[in-house]
Length: 127
Length: 210
Image 1 (cartoon, rainbow over the protein chains, first blue to last red):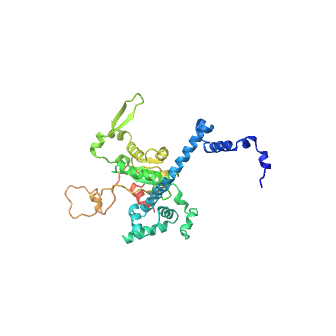
Image 2: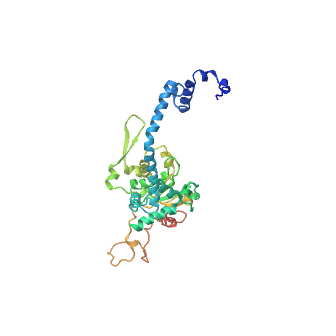
Image 3: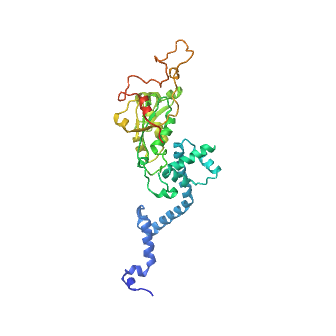
């Protein structure tokens, strides 16, 4: 069954053209911090909002690469604490079939330092 | 520290000391500024820590001593120039590095470290955390804060007197007046003192960072 009582209390502009109101509300919510008329006027702001959405979808493919680079800097810092080269460490782990990805290795380096130290010592022993 | 394995990665860090900002000492005697600039910039930025993130302020303070004694090839001192805008028009002043170093013995190291840091918003903040001293005198407040020593890039050359007893000594060589002949670090100038201690004593005090 359809509840009509709440709809009766809504302002008229919601009922005559609800899509118009809600489209403009969405644009203002997304473009709240933009400069100039792109913040307030729908026709101008919607183009900017769509461009920002396009940029974010295009960067989704690069997000994993950027995070991997951050993890690699963290792993290189942790490896240098134990006197080891990052590239040598990662290739040796692959050789010995220790398939830990960079995210888990950096988490180990931060929260489980002795585990990470044991990994470096394993590589030193086996090499 | 924790036994839960990877699941414990979601618990907060229990070692708060690893999140603190530390003070490091670096001896720039007979070092090339560009070579130490790479390492000092890493420490200022926080790239030596596994908790690094570019937006998190995880860098450390660095105190560089003996910047008066930095090393360049001989031609560089006279040929390489330092350019400065005068404020009038497009022309500027070019001075050789030798005269700049004579006026301000810390300028060259600061320039090299600033170049290694690169253009970023935090550059002023990072350079404010850099303390340069032309000789090995530092204030007592800084000395109390020091946590560790950044290892040197170029090892200090050892003197003959430092090597210990030698079988054949060429006549005329000066053994620095050391009587008992045992190996010692290079003697530092006698007219400087840091709370009645020499720089070698300070370096011996600090353990390596783990």
